Length: 384
Ligand code: FES
Ligand SMILES: [Fe+2]
Image (tube, rainbow, N blue to C red):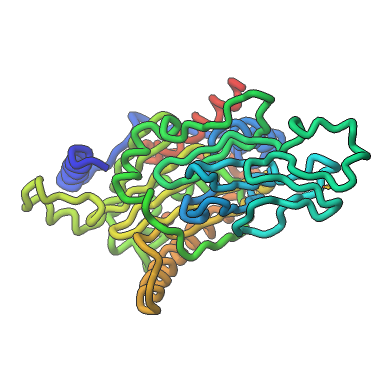
């Protein structure tokens, strides 16, 4: 994030601290509880948001060298993502073009070619169909047209994005992830995400809607009651910034230490030292920038009321000692301790939906980031 933006954000925070206010919309609004429970809605959201938009599936440090690959299944489409010789990334549907077997079963590795385990058809690194055992039986097959189904893929700020719908012949597979992120690409690059490395990946299944799994991170109103004995003492009660950036959100969660900056020259202000910055990359990725690292959560719908959350830290360099590993593990423990408190509330909401107590939920004026998020989901699913 550039200095001017950091200074602007710190000024806004200090003004709120002084006035005991927070960023807010002019009024609150409501959302029909069906948004969290209706199966057809979720199917539609998957088709529109999780198939056609660029969705972040991981980090570049998972595949640093040419031929490195990862497989990824959480989106509902089996993906094979491969580092090209020219440094870019290709993404394919990990399904054989003979009779449909999964081609690559390893979670990651490095290969020159991918062989289907069923009859041994092989595919090159660029997805091209390379060999067919006993090829004379397949005169009907145009090998050129039987490469692995291609998907649009690209990177920005170190994050790997894929649009998981197979491209038509001749469609451009380059996905402009920087354009999709808009100004947030520079924000995240500026925080060093592009050169960071992934640490401590984990995945949890939770009994709540994917949208609730996003909601629970988008406001500071819950900090005091929900995180009273854990992270709340570092933060303010209900004080945060919310900026809508295209379909995405930039949230600033200031720490109490930011008050010190009021007495320091602006030229020394570093936002990150005194605030966590939480980016919501629409539709399903959260990036929490902390003083010396970041945490990433990818939220994947698994049905109307089930969600898989894949998360990891992004640290400046691979930890070279046990001490370094313990340091990052301790950071992860604090993060996951707090997110468990959030998920506990989210699962409680999900269970409460069926009671009939609420036909709608209420977003207060300072819960406007949630209102933005749901409006964007509704607008895009309606328009498609
Ligand atoms: S299904 Fe892959 S080679 Fe037959
Ligand atoms: Fe929280």
